[in-house]
Amino acid sequence: MAETSASTAGKPAKQDAKAKLLDAALATIRTKGYAATSLDELCAAAGVTKGAFFHHFKSKDALGVAAAEHWSETTGELFANAPYHDHPDPLERVLGYVAFRRSLLTGGIPDFTCLVGTMVQEVHETSPAIREACDRSISNHAKTLEADIEAAMAARGMKPGWSAASLALHMQAVMQGAFILAKAKGGAEVAAESVDHLARYIELLFGAKTR
Image (cartoon, rainbow, N blue to C red):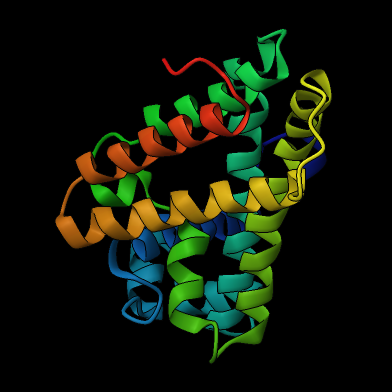
C-alpha cells in the first residue's frame, strides 16, 4: 500500500495514482475476472486517466504482474499478524491457519476469493509473466507454513513419505478449489465445508484427536 510521508513529498500524485490502480485491480479483477476487466474500467474505478495508467504500467499484463505482487504484500501482512502464530504447539498453528482461512469466508464472493487464483486460471497459457507472478504468490505463501508443519512432524517423530512443502501446497490447492466451488455454487457455504474437511484431514494425518 502507498503511504504518505515526508519522503514522498513532491511526487504524491503519481504514487497515489499507482496505488489507486493497484487497489482497483484487486477489487475489479476479483469481481469480473482478468479478461473481462478493461483498462477503461480500471481507470474509472481508480479515478485516474489512461495517461496516468500508461505512466505507471506499459500494458494491462504489466498491471496484472504488479497486482499479483501487491496482493502478496497485502495478504502477507494480514497472515503475518494473524493470531494462529501465538499457539505454542506447531500443529495447533497449522490448524489455526486453516481456521483463520475459514474465518475469512465472509461477504460476497469477490470479498474472499483469491486474486492470483482468479488470474492464473484465465491466463496461464496466454501470459507467462502473470502466471509466474501468480505462482510466486501462491508458492511463497505456502512456504510460510512449512516451518510449522516440519515442527509438528518432528514433535510427533514422524518420517512420512511426504514433505512439509507438499502438504503446504496441498493446503493451497484445497483453498483454491474451495474458491472455485464457491463461484460455481454462488456462496461461501461449500467453501467452508471444504476447509472443514481440510482441517479433519490434517488432524488424521498427524494422528490428532478429531475436534
